[in-house]
Length: 380
Ligand code: HCA
Ligand code: CU
Image (cartoon, rainbow, N blue to C red; front, side, top):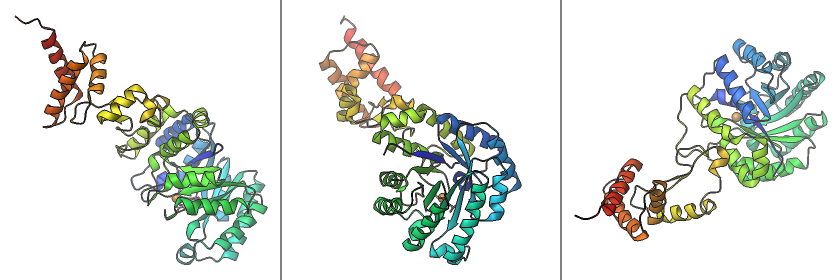
C-alpha cells in the first residue's frame, strides 16, 4: 500500500459538520494550511450550493496552490455547468444508487442514472477537466447495478470512480471485497469515502487501499455529516505505520497539529484527548513497566515516533503506578545525584502520597529536590 492520494474534503464534507460555518477567510486559511501539509487534492463545496459558495470556489482556485482543486457536484447538468466555470481542476460527481436513495431521495431508476451520468461526464471531459464519478450509499446498492454503472462510466473515460459508505455501515472485509471486485471491472483509479458511524472509517480506508483503491477522502479531525469521515491525522498515522518513508516524504507531518488546531478553532471544538498523534496523551507513558522500557528504547511502546510529527513524549511519574526507573530518569533530568537505593526510597514516598491523589510534575519535582537536599545536608 504505497501509492495513494488524499482528497481532503474539510471544505466540502467538513462544511456539512453541524458546527461548521466557514467565512471566505476561514476557507482560505484552511486551504493554505492543507496545501502546506501536502495533500494532493482539496475538495470544496459545490458552487451550485449558494452564491457565496460559488465565489469562494473561484477565490480558492485563484490562490495558486500546489494541490489540485476539486468541487463536488450532484450528477446534474445544471450543477456541472456552473462548476466548470469556476477554475477548478476537476469535478467529483455523485449520485445516489441505493434503493433507499433512489426511492426516497431523487426517485430515479438505473437507466435514467446511466443516461444522466453519460451526459454530465462527457460535458466535463469536453472542458478538459478531471472527472470522478461516485455512487452515494454504495454498500446498500445492488452489486450488479453498481458494477454496470462503473463499467459504463469507465468506458466513458472518467479519471476515477468512487465508492462511498455514506451511512458508515461497511466493515473492512466488505470494503476489501467490493474494491477488489471493482478493481477487476474498471481500469481507472478508485476513490473511497467512509463515514465513521461505527468507528471503521480508518480501517475501511486501509482495507480499500490494500484492495487496490488509489484515493481516500479525509477531513481534518474527521468532521463531516453526523460524526464525520476518515480523519486526516488518523489516516496519516495508519499509513505511516504501513510505509513510513513514503508518508514522511509526501506530507509535512509536523504541520498536522497546526491544521487541526486551525480547524478546531474555526468550528469551535476541542481536539479530542485521544486523537491520533495530536491528542494530549498520545505520547504519554504512565505505568512503571512502560516507562522503564520506553526510556531504554522508545520503540518498545511507541509505534509512532513523536519527533516525526513535531510532538514530544511525556513520561508521567506522579501517580501510584510509577516505578523507580522513571523516577531515576527525572532525577537525572533535574541534575540531582541519588543512588539507586535512594531513588527507590523516594519512589516509595511518591507512591504513598499518590495513593491519596495524583501529583503534578511540579509537586514531584519539589519532593525530589527536598529529598535530595535532606540527604545531602550533613547531620549536625
Ligand atoms: C453526502 C455525499 C457524500 C459523497 C461522497 C462521495 C457521501 O451524503 O453528503 O462523493 O464519494 O457520503 O455519500 O459525502
Ligand atoms: Cu460523505
